Image (tube, rainbow, N blue to C red; front, side, top):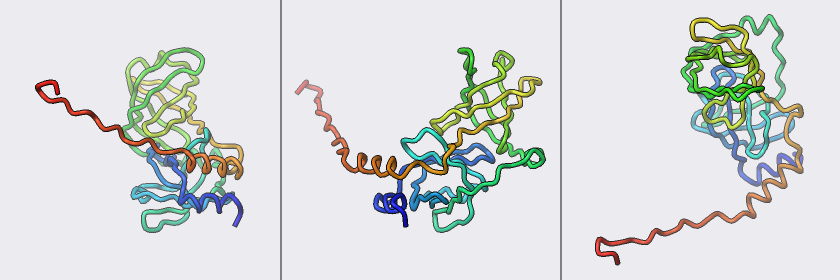
Length: 207
C-alpha cells in the first residue's frame, strides 16, 4: 500500500463530488483507498451511477476520469483505467432525457444566461432556452452540484435549442500527487471546527 492509500485510509475518506457523464447528474461522496489505479466512493446514491464518471476531490480543480467497475453496500469501486472513446463510439452514445437547470456563459464575451439541459450523453448535450443564438460558439456550462464549469462548443441551433459538444475538465495526471493529498489531510485535521454561536434571546419587554 502506498503513502496515498495510507493517507486516505487514515482520514476515513475525503470529501468529493461525483458526476455521472451519462446524464450530468452530480452528488457528494466520500472517496477512500485512493490510489493511482482507482478508489472506492461511499454514498447512498451510488446505485444511480451508470458507468463513466468524473471524480472531483475536494480542493483540486480537475476531474479524475473513471468508470464504475463494482458496487457494494452504499459504495462503488472506481477504476481510473478508462479507454478514450473513438468517433464511432461517440455516434452510438445513448442520449438520455434529463431536465437540468444550468448557467451558460461565453468564453470570450460576458454573455451569460440560464437555460435547461434536456438530454445528455458523455460527449454532448442539448440546451433549451430563449436567446441561445446570442451565445458564442465556445461556452462554459455550470451544472448544479459541480463547482467546475464544463467547457462546450455549440455545433447547431434550431427552434430555441442548441447542440453542444462537451469537453470535460479531466486531470492530465491520474490522481493528485500523494504529498498534496497528505498535506491537505493534515490541514483539515489541524483546522478547528467553529463552535456554534448561541443567539441571545430577547423578550417582548426588551430584556
